[in-house]
Amino acid sequence: MSHQSDRSHHNWVQSQNPPKPVLKLQQQLQKEPTFYYFAYGSCMCPVDLKRSLGESTHPYIIGPAILKNYRLGFYSYSPTRHCGVLDVLPDPNASVKGVLYQLPWRLSAYLDKREGVSQSLYRRETVDIHCQNQIYTAARTYIVVNKLTEELAPNDWYFNVVLRGAVTCGLPEEYCWNLFDHMYKLQQRHQQQQIMRTAEKPLLQLSPTLKITPHS
Image 1 (tube, rainbow, N blue to C red):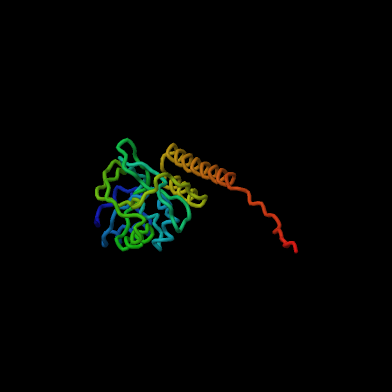
Image 2 (spheres, rainbow, N blue to C red; image 1 turned 90 degrees about the vertical axis):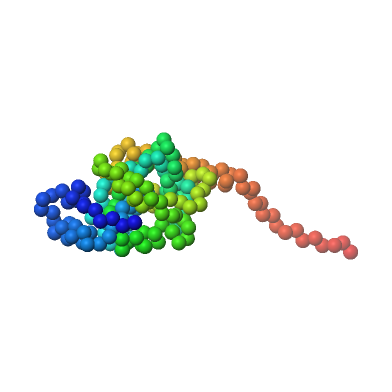
């Protein structure tokens, strides 16, 4: 669903005399359809998101945002990142913080491709997002289609991208710390499981082949 909405309340355009690139972006967004996108994982990092969308996404950031009645979890394995990646699950007692973008509709297919929609890795979900004392209805996010039964640890690269995005986009310090702590504990658990598996493997003892010569 596309939206043509006034961005005058956004931090990016609060100045009465915005820089020329920002002014040009305002004019461009007024002429083309857009959609709201809530990112809670690696897409919180505009630099990483640029890899998939092919252009800078910094100007499209509305600000830190909240998805209510959901919680975070690493319930998916990414075949491209080779580790556990983030998902959101319904939970009436929780909320997920992230970043709200207003993206041009022409980037929609690129975002679907990044999230593996055609491979049924993630699917679109329409949600209400709270951001800057407003509620953005019919925003898009992505949730995992086939969830794992238990969380899978992220690798160091994904760990750093997610945390960098959370810090860069201004999520609360306590939330960033809790996110760091959760990812760290998952990695520690994974390492312990690897150690246990190694210890449980039987030691292969190689012995020389005995050559039996029959008696005459």
